[in-house]
Amino acid sequence: MTSVMTPVVDINRTLGPLPHDDVPSRDEPGLVAELERLRIDTACVVHAYAVHGDPRDGNDELRHVTDPRLRPVPVLVPGPLGTGPWTGGAPLVRLCPRQHGWSVTGPHARELAAELAASGTTVLLAWDEVTADEVHRLAATAPAPRIVLTGTGYRALRRLAELLDAHPSLYVDTATLCGHRQVEWIAERYGARRVLFGTGAPVTDDAGPRYLLDTLDLPAHDATLIAGGNALRLLSGEP
Image 1 (cartoon, helix red, strand yellow):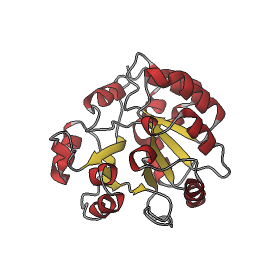
Image 2 (cartoon, one colour):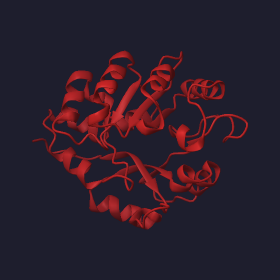
Image 3 (cartoon, one colour):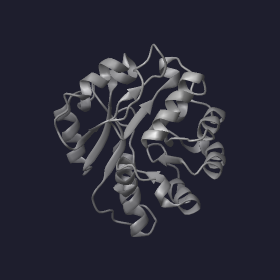
């Protein structure tokens, strides 16, 4: 059992009201209280409006975030009907191609991917938003942005392993890697530097991944990387 020291950085969290549930993180004070309860020092947050509504509205809401523990993550949509050309300004962004109705391998997406790669921006991409083949094609582009795959789990492990073997620019978060020693297996095979603590909350549970972090059967250095070191490295623009 490994006891994780701070900082703990949740790479994958949502701020704002959900359309199907009443959640504590519907506003900034509620989300900060949840982070304090679970001993999470920093959270990278998208706004619920950006995921479930118009990304431009949700991204605008992030401009009102005042607590330094919350790091805004804009949601981007490529093309003339999207959020506009990416010129940088945030080290981490999220893409929701299925939710927002665009192709991750289309010409507009390829242009956006090149912009993200050039600016050193890391991408959050949920497993249920893409196919494994789309991830492969996106990661095989040159240059390719760094991609953190979220929402993977037991049923995705074989395809995930194939992708991680092929593409060193791919990372994974812990939100749904809740099976026995799944996080340890990925860290031992691919290196702890490619695993980031993330909860996916409030859509998915936050207490489970947080408890898992404190009970990882890994060397203390590896657990510290997963807890927050890797996230801070990517947020600073380092590979």
